[in-house]
Length: 513
Image: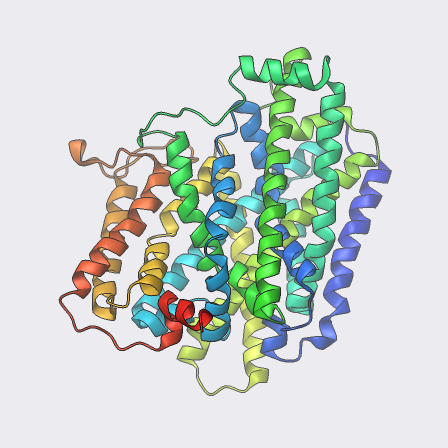
């Protein structure tokens, strides 16, 4: 592949310059921990909506979805399509619930409802899940830019990591959200440009693209059989329903946006905007993969170009100078936006759930300094995970990330649902349920084949007692284990006395007054 032109490099540097400018632009306003993590009331709804979009879209979407669309059908879109279906019925009470009950950390609700064990279990699961996701984002960016420029991916990791450190240390949440707004426009522009050029380049246009893709099983959402031991329509639908609740009701990166809004109404409006903008972005980039498959059925593809690198290859060989730079800049910016949100949220959870608990009584100035140290530590961990993936991962990144989310969601949705909808569930019952969930998840993980790693093998072979269902079902079952065990175990202990604002029933009663 030809390397990038000087004009392309200039565009990339210009976009990175805007990123760094936003970091320094809001540096003087980060004088308190509340401003650093929330900057409450300083953003209109549309800006928070675009921020949610950029938070949920990263290089995993930018490169992972085209990779998946190139080598398979559209089945992975089902998880995203379940989000609006589930959230339209729940976002109305999730937002006011959190805005009334918690200060900064999502997992404060879990402690108020079920005690400290539930809080630390859910917050630690979130942190582990975020680090795993951040590593994959950095890996995809590093590999893509390496294919485009031949720059060592480790050097790319370090450079992107440096930008992240400066942006997050200096700008806080204000820089993160306004960068998200900028990135939201770039996402739509880059997606439409790439898909438009691809469809225009296919001989026969859209009708031929649909015909060839259909003949080669690159369309649809099957297989549709009701089996859970492999990836099917129903596995993704069920997993997607739980993913929607996990992301919008238990994920700090999203809940933190609710708290940043001026009002409940503004937060709900931003959430709905983010949901309905994210779905078409996922769809566009999956369709890019499908169009790439059709294009290279009509044109020769070098043997050394794989599904993981076919999109960068197309960009370098078919896009004009300047457009390539814009697309690469959008890719890097998507990664930085998503990672910045993750890093800020990780630091917020670390501050509220751990630092303040173990070092109470500190001044806000001392807490702000500790917060920035946690941001720095999060950046180092993200870079470390990216290096790990570069050296030890193989196969589809989307497969790997969906699996990590399934494993480390670890019953969190079950805790939330039982906490919100059952007045009978109590702390003792939930503690038993969490232990049962940990045992179940450990067994399922050890007795099933890892996805996405080189030389995968069973860590523990129990023969007929191995976990044989698809890894995405592991996350579903863990939530169900918590709900069933938690409720039954709670019956053996006294009914808890709860504040009204912790339950859905109280929200509904107050709304009808």
